[in-house]
Amino acid sequence: MVILTNVLIVALVAIGFSQRGFSGWWDTLRGDWEPPTVSDPYADDAAEATSPPTEDEPETEPTPTPSPSPTTEEPEPPSLEERFEEGEDLSVLVLGDRTGTHENDWVAAWARQLTGSRDVQLTSTLAEDPTRWGDPVDFGGEGPAVDIDNASLVQGTPEYAAARLDLFVRDDPDLVLVSFGRANTPDDLPGQLSDLHDELTQELPEAEVRYVVQPPRRDGQPVVADTVREWAADQADVELVDVAQVFQDEGIVDATVSARDPLSVNIFGGQRWAQIVQEAVFGGDQQAEEDAPQDGGNAGAGPPAEDGAAEEEAAGAAGPQEPSAQPSPPAPSLVGPTAEPSPWQPPTSPWSPPPAPAPDPVPTTPAPTGPTGPPSTPTPTDPTPSSPPSTEPGPSPTPDPPAPEPSEPEPTGPDTAAPLSWWTAT
Image 1 (cartoon, rainbow, N blue to C red):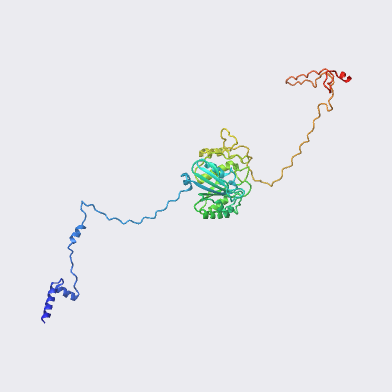
Image 2: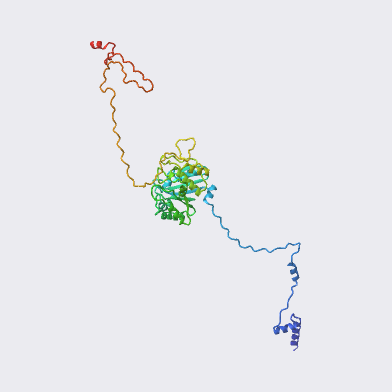
C-alpha cells in the first residue's frame, strides 16, 4: 500500500510539471487538446536577414530562368553564280546533240569566252566511240579553273544520255547543261527528258541542272522549243536557259543559220548562244581572248548592224567577229562577210529538177588569112597598101619596110662562098 501510494504521488507530481499539466491531460482524454505553439528563438535573426536592403546595399533582382532558344537554321549554300564570283574551281558536264559538237558551236565558243577570267580545259567524247573521252584541250587563260566535259553527239538524244550516264560522268560536276532537240520530235522528247531528269536527280543530287531551249531549226521539221517549255512547266524543280527566246527577241534566228549544217548555227550564232548560257548560269559577260577558228563553210553573215551593234555597245562587250586567216588592221563590225549565202528556207512547193541547160554553140574555125600551101619563094613586087588608110583619129600607122631585092636562094648544102651556079657546076 505504501508503495502504491508513493507511485501515485510521483505520477501526480510528473503530470503537474509536464507541458500539458492536469488540464492538458484532461483535454487529451476528451479529444480537445492541441499541441502548444512553440516560438522560434532565432525568428528575429531570420527576419533581419530577409529585411529589405538598405541604401548602401544594391537591390538584387531575381535571375529569370532562360527560355529555350529556337533551333538555328543552317544557311543556304551559295548559288553557282556566287561560287563563280568568289573564284571557286568549277566543273561542267554538257549533254547534248549536234549543236555542240563543232569547234564553232556554242560549247567551244563558251570555253573561249571564259578564258578572259578563267583557266579553261575542254574534253570531248570521241567521234568513233561516244562512250570514251578524248584528250583534254587546254584553252589557256588565267585564274580559277573551269573544266568542261562535252558529251554532245551527232544524233544525240536524252534517251541515249540517260542509258550511258555512268560513262559520261567522270567526276562530280557542279553544273549539268542538257541541250537536246535536233534528233527528237515533239512526241518523244518529253518522255525522254523525264527519264534523263530522274537519272540526273538520282546520280548527281548535288549538281545544278539546267535545260537549254534550242533556237528554232531551219530544215522544215517541227520545232521543239515550245515542247521543252511545256515539259518544264509540269516539273517542280526544272530551270531553263531559253536561248530560243533570246534569238527570237533579237531577231537573229535567220541570221544565225549555218551554211555548213542548217541544223546548227554559224559562228556568230555560237558566240551569242555561249553568251546567253554564261549570263544564265554564271552571270555577267565574258570577253574571249581569241576568235573562233575560221571555217569557210560556216562563216555566215551576222545580224543586222543596228540590232547587234547597239546591243553589244550597251553591254560594254566586244561583239562577235568573223575571224580571218591573216591578221587584218581594224576589227570588222558585227556585220559578217558576204560569203555566207542567204539563210536557208524550207521549200514551199514540191521540188522539181531545173530545166536542162541549152547546148553550147559549136565553135567555128575562122577562115585562114594567109597562104595555106607550102611556103614558096616570094615574088618581088612593089609594096602596096592592103587597105586604104583609116579616117578615124589615132596613131599614124608605121609604113611597111621595103621589099628586099630579089636574090638567089641560100644553098641548103655545105657552107660555101661560091655562087649556087658555080657550086652546081663543080
